[in-house]
Image 1 (cartoon, rainbow, N blue to C red):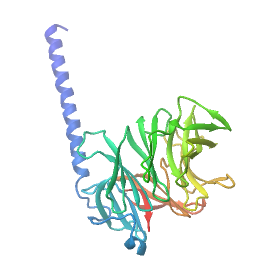
Image 2: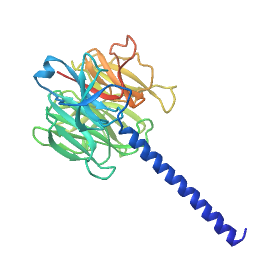
Image 3: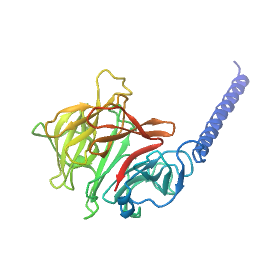
Image 4: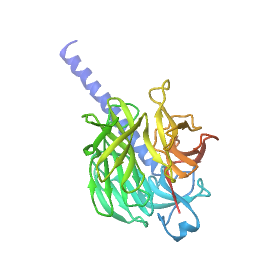
Length: 343
């Protein structure tokens, strides 16, 4: 091949690659455009007032959650009557990638409005969704929880990696006391008690906080290839391991049980999870009736019902199942994530 031929081949290759790149950009732009268009399928969504507490919600319990339905209200917090979870939605205008609420306090992990892609913040909300505090995040949002009193807020971000399926990731978990303003930026500063002895390792990661009260929590701690259920003491800044193979715990409203996801041997490497419930008094665990792999931090709708996300036509659908291991999975609502009961 002479020099002239090589130049022609190079130019053709550049043109082809350029065309592929332009095509990819146009397809991505078209996909984003479609996601913002009103859909002809799925629940009706209209703008309105969404509250996290108040007399109206007391008369009629509601579910508040992130809507993943494509359209102008995509990723907004919406509410529906608890008696009609798949029915028409009221959209708040506030977008969150992760959300949790309790006792009139909300935690919203979101992209920073107006900032470049990849910039996120945690926003603490009051019962009328007014912003009380912003905290910049050092990674991409993945988990958040509010304590039963509404005073304590926790969140986890991926510092590196973007999935819990393998172990090649790094997280950072923070806790904010909304009453005093005390901010603990990284649980890795806590002292670890493992098997009754002080423990240190450079590979420790924490995620999936669920609060018992304003001074104590449960969470997942991973080290040396094993994920542990830990109980944390905020005042003493300690965590104590309780048992292995527990991830993303979620405490029941009565404080007696934890729902969690567990790696089950023999399942596919990319879908290793099953949902379980652990009785904290007897430390006996039982599987739930959901047989599909649920990579989520489940939520309790009440003392008898656990909800979780599974892939759907519009990112995720919310499903529910009885907490005692009986019954069958039920699709609670389409295009929804992390419903919280508001009364």
